[in-house]
Length: 286
Image (cartoon, rainbow, N blue to C red):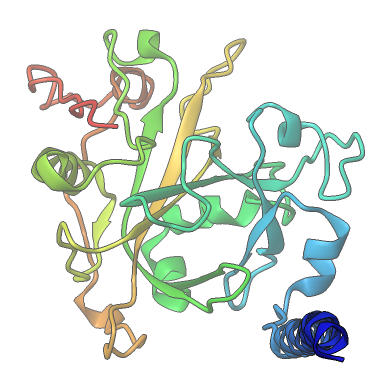
């Protein structure tokens, strides 16, 4: 009898432990499943979800009230791709609005750069060229550029014309597209922008801001038989926490002597008072 008890008790303990392990293992799995399902059910959906589902390159949406600028924004490793492909990745000369591949799509960089074609109509970034006129700026001083999950407004602080070919400005290209123009680069960058802007908007900018740069082609440096590689650039800063997005456009005033590329001055027959200006280059601090 004692021998029988000695055998039964260990067996009973083993069976009991096994049953407990099965029970709690199932319970844990059920709890994990419930937690996972709960996470899925509460996962935040983007208001741009249809664009995300359609193209995984989607990084944001740009809109300028009162204009035809109203487009999804994409980004890929090849900046040439969306010059000739639309949002659906289909070949199309008008391309798409896209973010520079050098920029962080989460907007962690100081400077986020968006490109779009100018077709001399109302498509893509064609209407961005209208910012050359201060009255157009006064009607449209704010840009809406959202990421997938964050709505953002940006106040325009500068508009300027520049070159993308060094031969059009005595071997120099102003590097306004570098993502890291904050920090030690800020003073040099903002000094250049203040010289170049066509008008002063009265919107202040500091090194702790985030800026948005829109860049498209300009025909202002073309001459008969020659098409220049010129750009019109609109620079805006993110509306700060607690700050109103309203802009007092009455503060805007014409810059009497903007800094232009040399070819522009030659074409217009104006003196380039900045011809001996020191050429500014950002520190490469990636």
